[in-house]
Amino acid sequence: MSKITDLVSNLAGPICRDQGCELWDVEYVREAGTWYLRVYIDKEGGVSINDCTAVSQALDPILDEQDPIPDSYVFEVCSAGLERQLRRPSDYERFQGAPVTLKLYSAKGGSKERQGYLLPWEEDSVSVSYKDGTTEKFLRSEVASVWLRIE
Image (cartoon, rainbow, N blue to C red; front, top):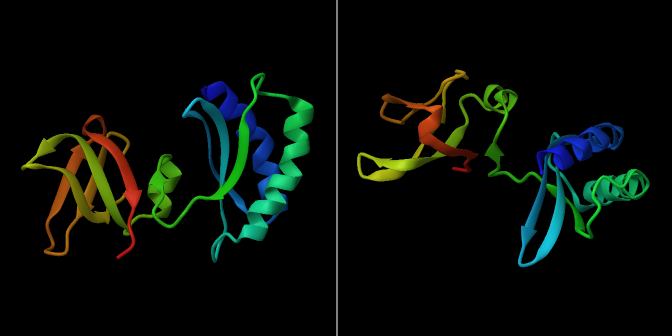
């Protein structure tokens, strides 16, 4: 699957930039027996339905021409959303200090979830600070996901 998402990312990136947006992520997933190709976009000040439509209309004919996916699928262009998952090192750097929710693979201290503020990027760990001034560090292997959170 990653090959498909990589190919689509390469096609979608320039189109998103041309439309004044940023490519956030691409996913190709099967849900309830149907394949979905989702292109998530972001933009300073927020993404509108017009942004999604413009990217979709520009990218759709290119996907038809390049045909990177042999099976039938539903194509969607969506906003990355305010409470989005951080995936790349650049996401962690960009949102340093932002409120986040960490989801852990195994419970620590009775909980598999932490809510704090993202500390600077480290390759092998994720650290958060809390309102009481304490900090906590988790190995990447302990962290299932990190999501931006709205307070």
